[in-house]
Image (cartoon, rainbow, N blue to C red; front, side, top):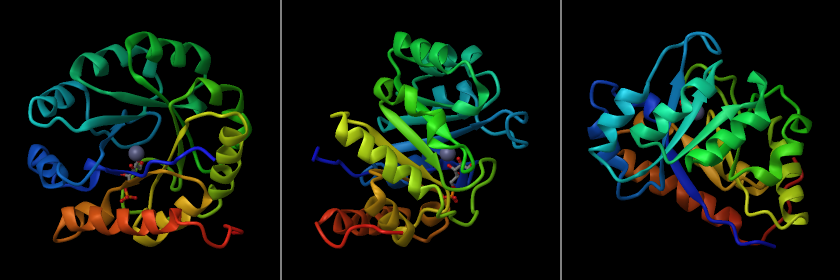
Amino acid sequence: MLARVIRIAPSLLASDLSYLAGAAEQVSNNADWLHIDVMDGHFVPNLTIGPPVVASLRARTSLYFDCHLMVSNPGELLEAFRSAGADGCSVHVEVGDTSALLAQMRGLGLKVGLALNPDTPLDAALPYLGQLDVLLVMTVFPGLGGQEFIRGPLDKVKLARKFAEDHGLALDIEVDGGINAATGRESVLAGANVLVAGTAIFGTPSPAASVRDIRKEALAALVPGPAYDG
Ligand code: DX5
Ligand code: ZN
């Protein structure tokens, strides 16, 4: 079995959006990645953060920027996000043109991620798993923070982890939506290793302590124990 590194990725969407650099600073000593939710008002109804904001934040923190592109035209934006300082981007498989988008991200020197909505089967991503750094499995429907965790997608996490192990792939499997210490633990038991959490981190009095709590549960779940059978 390949060693799995747990990464905690606070989602800025749940922070005070007038205070982004401060929010990044609150978690910078404890988090691994900063998850940046980009919404275009088209792929999802909401509108959030674009490249100029990412560039401003880049000047204020050295955290890894994990940009989740919930947009219909990611190909037109990837270069701008890279220039702004994104380390990795995830595009949604539902927007299509996946092969070209993955190649474009690789060419730009970005870590390459592919995201799946809760109702999109793993089959849609299977042909690409060998080309990915990150598989992002949504555990809520994208568009809003603070929604309730959907358990069904953990079956995709299980299958994807098995595929990665069988093929010797060092794949990061990221879950996003409704993650807290308890659902993070369930996700790690299913095979995830990157946990995105917004409300469970920035909605608490101590975001840093919340990152530590989520990590503690996740690491405990990595210790061999009863197999996940959910
Ligand atoms: C949903 C976003 C998530 C969201 C997570 O569209 O992709 O990253 O901000 O927030 P919580 O943890 O509050 O569900
Ligand atoms: Zn996200």
